[in-house]
Image (cartoon, rainbow, N blue to C red; front, side, top):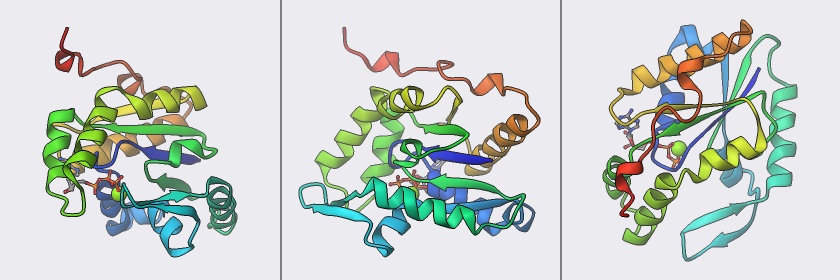
Length: 188
Ligand SMILES: Nc1ncnc2c1ncn2[C@@H]1O[C@H](COP(=O)(O)OP(=O)(O)OP(=O)(O)O)[C@@H](O)[C@H]1O
Ligand SMILES: [Mg+2]
């Protein structure tokens, strides 16, 4: 099964995948593809966005490279594509990590390379469900996990639960989109 693990920057995708990769019982079953690393290492970008201090991924090249990696993966392994663009690639299901925008602002504020503007832009994107909306436009198999008050380990367990449920043919209903929202942030 191919899973896209996406979410606004700072929602904890790399933290979750780091944990999966470190633990032997998970490492045998789940192959992590770090899309940010692939883009940078393989120069799979069209240009550098100087204003945002980031690279604009070349999605065609990225998709091709990911397909190549998946084709070489040992049979029976599940693939987790990790990155805030993963939901734009072909996948069997999309898992969106969510974080309350106020908590997200705090997490991103600790990143030295992030300007005040960039922190604000990402917190706003989270408040407006941007990645969730893009994901539901792309796939009918979309799930979300609220990481705001969850430990990284609890988030890992939720990710694994979703994948294993889907493999058994059942829908992990607790993680269907729309179970929570950040409506209290909207100033009417
Ligand atoms: N469940 C969690 N609770 C609290 N803090 C967390 C949690 N998960 C991750 N963090 C912290 O949030 C920060 C961002 O995490 P991480 O780098 O994993 O995000 P990311 O989604 O991979 O972001 P990016 O898209 O920019 O790569 C880190 O400082 C990490 O320690
Ligand atoms: Mg990351």
